[in-house]
Length: 190
Length: 284
Image (cartoon, rainbow over all chains, first blue to last red; front, top):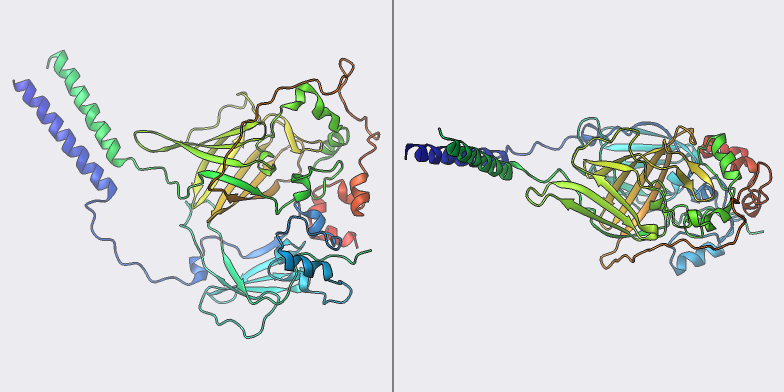
């Protein structure tokens, strides 16, 4: 009888202990979390270090990036009918020289580039290909009145921070107001 | 305490331990769900991936002289031999193929811990297992396979996979080889219904630098896979022992690709320098 009681007591103690430890681990009985800290400036909140000098490694789509592709070589670009019509009518001899360096294609160019902070809320990207400058606005920058090749890009950091030592989240940017730019710079048809 | 009581006590303790584990065990820190069917997008390297790579196209690839020599000796007729007909792509190349990709998980039934992520591509049934339970890679002398041995972990919302124990395969299906010492780190980024797969392949034998490639995928809610049984047959009757190949300097097709696209041999022959912006200047 005494042994049975002891066993029952052990079982009860173990079960209660397990429940208490378990609920503590799950945070059921934890006090309310402190209020969130005010947001830090984008530069300080950057979970990854993007600044520095970078070089494009052109080991994919080489034929469209390192040399000027033939006119109407539109393979793999999901153009609609209008996009195709414009591409096929384009005359490289008469248009400007910089359209290929628009925001949508700039980072596909064979280029060296520099990323640097300008203040705490603006990341600046400069390329030697086409000598372009693109800015990523983390704050509440007002879109410019005029359209430009690089457009107006709004950025924010997303994803939880990675474990120490690992790479961090991506930097999505939404670019608007580019002028009429091109994705590929076709050569004059022969 | 009698033997019976000791056994009962041990059982109670085990029950309590199980209860505790059930309370504290939470799913592995999988921040993202990649499960589903994914259709490949071919916005990168479409020439290589849809019709298949051209003979002699090594543009921008950081290959060694040994890799180039092997590729130049390669004869596409090799693929018609029974021994080669059912070879799947190695995991270092399969994600660039044309097949639908299916991803699913294995979870422990009791704890719901993520044990393994499977990827499967229909063509030649490329089935890959990515262990998520923290196990180490086996010793070097363990079996090498087409898909290799893969372990994964989460870095934020990104699945990062390390692969070793690959069989000698290819980095491009035009004869460019990859050795059994190659390793790969791949990263799966998901943005809504789009997934970007980044692969970084290293090979001390056939690459002078890591080879970085990206592959896009689009989620397919109604996707499906078809079986791909492969039974080798005699496609071409050959003399016994004959293996299609070209001796050095005798491959007549190497120049075709460059001639078609007006590219000089120093570009099509590849090498790390051909991937840098400065190389574009030499072509003007």
